Image (tube, rainbow, N blue to C red; front, side, top):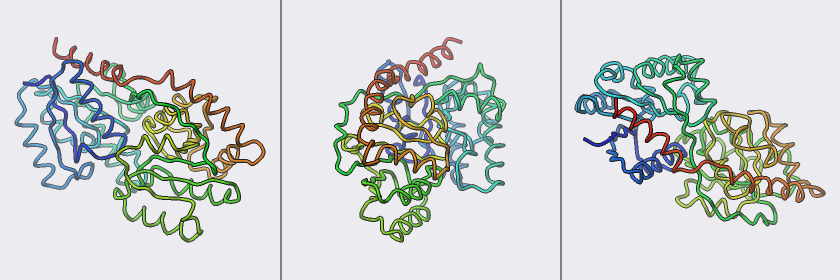
Length: 351
């Protein structure tokens, strides 16, 4: 029997922060000597159809008693029935990037249903791994998860060569899937108010998670004649090149569990403009960027204008660039992240 099974819905190679965390955890745990077996689940999660529910039930029922199973939250939050039936027989560890009920674009009824389902599933987990302290606090206050069950394992970052930040005009980079929660519409509205300033924008991230939303954004870009300044790049296998060629990183998310892309931007020494959500206030120090209220177009536009203004923008960018380079030295490593989870696994094995 492997040291642990890692249950993940959909394609593990999907280019999002959550899947990136899972992929890196696989390799880092292996480097620490743990045998990890991938347990694939249906890609229909977090809205599983009948076939997906039946498949997940069969796979969990087939696992040996006492097995340690880490389940990605994209699936676990919708697996309350499976968790209830197998929670006592297996050692279930929930990996919660952020609660499913926090996803934007849901109806109130859908959010309430997902909250109930996830809370019931979490009650049957022997431990819960989260990627930030704010998520840990949220699970305690809103999902009745005892603090002693929670392990905070922030995403790691790799050391990078710092970006030169010499673009003319400055390149504004956003790395985020085109979904409602990521707030591209807010960023677009802000950019429309500062179109008189010099900038180009690159939106890197999957466009097929919410095709209708992507189409809506692209139509708005064209309607305001900004298609020559804003490029929807799509998914990029080697996103490092995007960071290396950028001048400012912008993350307009309405909600984040952690904000891995913001941490990656700091690793490249990029000034950051982001929203005060999730762990962003912890990740981005005041010397490295500007944080604004989520959903506030005026605040976003003002922050961007500060870094793009013809008189003082260059000096402001240089100042925040230096702050980002200093902040990069304090970012957690992936080996440290994996060690936290490996310690949890070893503790469960010794019991």
